[in-house]
Length: 301
Picture 1: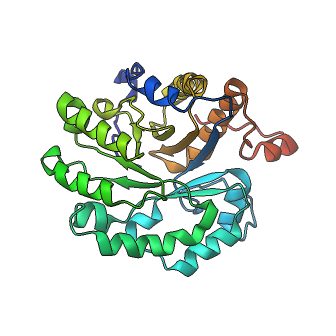
Picture 2: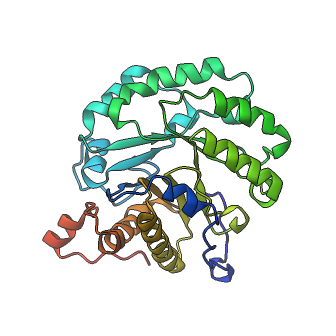
């Protein structure tokens, strides 16, 4: 994932933003003693991107990936709308606790730019629902040049989205978050329609990293810089997620990208270990059994 990549990450100020004042209010509305559902994964499962992750002789990459992680951010659906049979095959290959979080197709977000998308959305969902209970939150990612001047398109799209299917949205134009009046109108729209406001944490775009949740689900897309600071940034995330857990969050969806994707599983393992310790959860640590059995020490750098 190249979005927001920089050549010199050591020069970036990675100071974590304070919580938005409205986030705690949103979480307190649903607060109880239940433990949140937590899903952590990568963006892809193919061997070409995740070099070194698969044991020699692995015949089916998805089956192995799903034995190590409980979620995948399914970016492949951005480039093509797969037929229902393909989603059904993915469903059959994965365990009961596994979830897919597919990206909406580029025809919706980038070509039509949310205008006259009813038919293509229906075709997309007709296929995606074959994941049944393994279908997690679908997410919409808009082009970085999609600005608030087209806010009316966002309103129409959000209000027409089927309420029974969870949706999260990501904006990349800075004015969605840094024009206060626009931001407040956007947050209000998302909150009223129970849509998750995606948080993107990447080195070169600190201007769009917000801490405003609009429902009880945190959907975080984290982009490492293949630099030692990746660790401390994830440490900050663990602390923030612990605060949100204490405030009543119901679901955490956290997807780890790297500019060099082959390191994503290693960084994910570090993050999951920290989550298990601090949030008192019991997520599987990817490849931990392999490391113990082979006494292998794996390092990112």
